[in-house]
Image 1: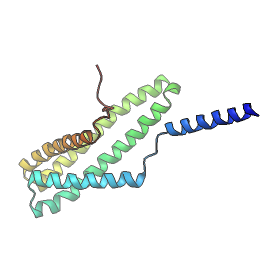
Image 2 (image 1 turned 60 degrees about the horizontal axis):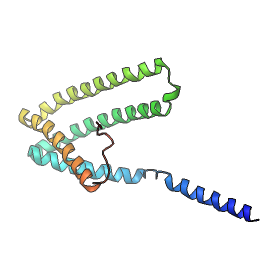
Image 3 (image 1 turned 120 degrees about the horizontal axis):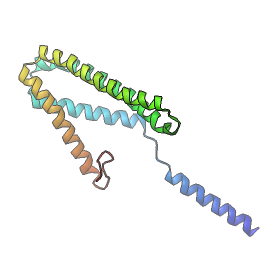
Image 4 (image 1 turned 90 degrees about the vertical axis):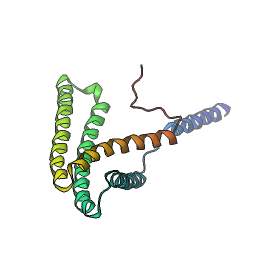
Length: 164
């Protein structure tokens, strides 16, 4: 009887420990709310940095939003491919690895093609100085956003930071 009780307690404790180690799944609604908040901050930041007039903003933002959507779609597709490769890496053949490497170059080219396509469109609706300021503002916004995230979580190490 004591052995049965002891085994039950050990199993329950093990189950509690294992369930406590499970990572919580991200809430898609919360993720979308965060994305919307970041997007709103970005709109305000870029509008301010470029000092867009109401007329410029009216023609610029639909183009920029489409650009961001196409970039996000491409990145989401790439992330899915990379996740699949990571989870199946032990089963991948040299041919699979080659396709993964080739897909990285294809992705880079796709991002470049998008940048060139939308660069031409931005030049039709904004003065060239503001187009240049746009690229600078995007980089500055990313930098500021990463700083805010880092400041909010000072104990978390950057998973993308290279060690050594």
